[in-house]
Amino acid sequence: MPGSGERRKRDNSVELSGERSSMSAFEWNKIIGSVLTAMIIAMVSGILASELVRPKPLEKPVFLPAGTEQTAAAPAEQTAAKLEPIEPLLAKADPKRGEQLTKICNTCHTFNKGGANKVGPNLWGVTEEGIAAVPNYQFSAALQADKGQKWDPEKLNQWLYNPQSFAKGTKMTFVGFPKAQDRADVIGYLDTLK
Ligand code: HEC
Image (cartoon, rainbow, N blue to C red; front, top):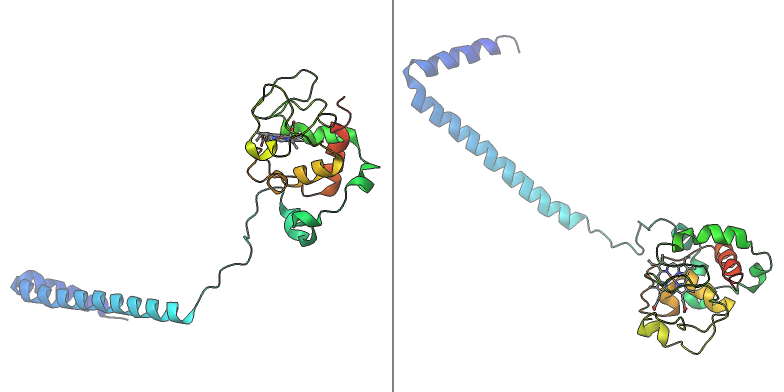
């Protein structure tokens, strides 16, 4: 607006020349008034907004840790009981690829004969030995409950899909391989360790 600068300049000069206190009281009223108005508007629109929009909780978490996307994409595979038999895939399992995939296990396991127990037990001969049978390793009560059984391919399939779904409360904190072929390749590799 032309001239408004002019006016402000004049106001300022009025303030400076004595009527300062009454002018600034008037200014303060305006400021406080507009702050209060803004607060009331914010409050009312907040109340209205929360009345109008009722967020629905998500049915499934949207964020999934790396490597679990497949699980989300294939709901058929999600329930432990519905895992497809691994046997047919084992026929074309690639132990070399399986060995590559077990790099992820190395933080917790050794795979060589006579290898040390780490966070998890040594896995040499695991398909030959019983469940929770590695000497000098303290297995969880969850896995010890299956002691006396063998690690056959279907049990390993369930275990590697999701350790918790095989032995609830196990201390193996591994997210699992969602892809059946990955599990088959790893089981194929474990079976060579004898
Ligand atoms: C974060 C550590 C960790 C990782 C990673 C991990 N494991 Fe384990 N694993 C364990 C622990 C701990 C146990 C013992 C579980 C118990 O006692 O409940 C275990 C137990 C096992 C057993 C049972 C051994 C037995 O003698 O009964 C197998 C088989 C196994 N792991 C395979 C694997 C494979 C294959 C991978 C990689 C794909 C893997 N684990 C990755 C920690 C791990």
